[in-house]
Image 1 (cartoon, rainbow, N blue to C red):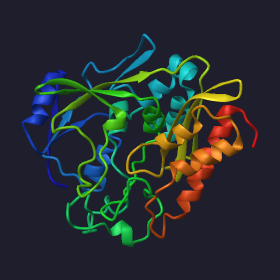
Image 2 (tube, one colour):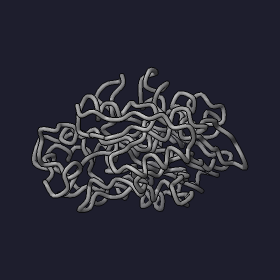
Image 3 (tube, rainbow, N blue to C red):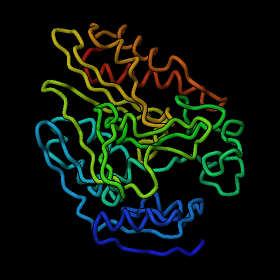
Length: 330
């Protein structure tokens, strides 16, 4: 392990200044991903870690049907919030499915948005062909054994999966990310926060170096909206998703008035299934409609030998969660 400097920031402006001034500096919050990458895997080698755990970026507040969540709120704290349980239960379900209690008590919401891929090739520093670590080196996952990898937003350049459970319902809800940088603050919709790999898989989001997530804002859906999160995985205990789906539906007299659908376990980023939403909106809540939505969501996948099974599995995941949320029997 290469030595690094550890610094504890006193306020957000100081933290931003410390990281912005050093190209090798990174933030440290809960550390559930960062410390793995630095100490265990050795694929991230910062020259300075800036500890932000004492910054005033905590708290959950409700204002005008928007839930404001500080970046340092833990997964467990958000899962325990009464408004989350009442208005957006699929956020709670995703949080509980996403990590063990020990991790949920450490991992922060801001850190969850920025968690790195679980791709075994990215996390193995002996693998030379990884465009995410070394742009232009190739993608070993495309030609090697691949199962926990992406089929949406993927290409020959990279099939690394974004593994977050929480981000799936957050994307479905049009969550907004508030960011602080040396030149001021800005806000970015979560649907525009992540970047498709393209020819630069090492660029994963729109953050500039040194910018700090300060909070997220979750717009709450209309009263009467029902939601649910379904995670399909190899084992019932703590495990990453093979496929997952978050759905929120407002149904009146059997007609789907509003629909939100997002997918996990299949995308290079949390995947908003807008084509499926178009199929659902204004249609009758039936098995036929749900299957058509699933087909629209997985219309153009990029698969390799190890990931082809995910296409059908993802479709079935979508149909099942839509049946569950709507209350329509298969």
